[in-house]
Length: 235
Image 1 (cartoon, rainbow, N blue to C red):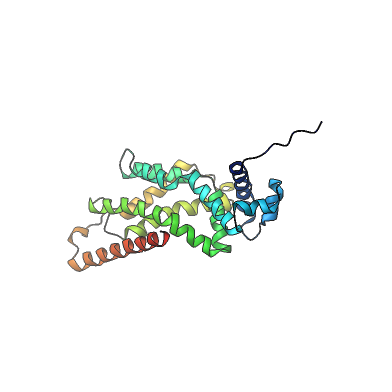
Image 2: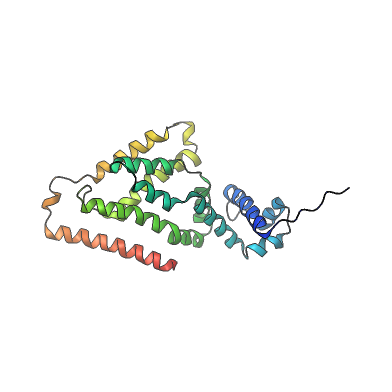
């Protein structure tokens, strides 16, 4: 007797397609993957793919959005920066959390940056700009309290996250961990220490002339305006 045919709900089918598409896109990239391949893996007609996702680009974007929800990067960053301890403790906790993330989203974004710039730009406007702004705001408060030297908060945020993201790429994508199997806490502690050393107030900072202070204020204002523009484009 033939096995009964089990109906799959639209929501479950969409989830199945997303999971398989994530796996294939992360391995083969945007250009190297076809919706036909995804349909074959999901054992559905290709038309089913387009019923849920009108275009391949929208499917790729849905995959990225799902990974962002899984990572919950902004919420985790806010929680770590509001945690217990001093700046060093909070930043080490944040760095360890970033270093421990799955590489799937990183692979998807690198592929999109190389193969489909519009998707990459859309991701930056929708997600990255806000992540940088969360850390930049933490830095602004540190500058106002005298814990950090007067510096462009957005560039400082990019510098901090850039060290961590590049380390992950070297270790996970370029095979660096085969030769230098660093322990995550060691990496987090070392990179945070390097960053904090560069952020310490320097002798004479409090005696800076008015022109210098005005220049830094203008830079900070430009950073805020850039962030506001990016967030406005999203809405």
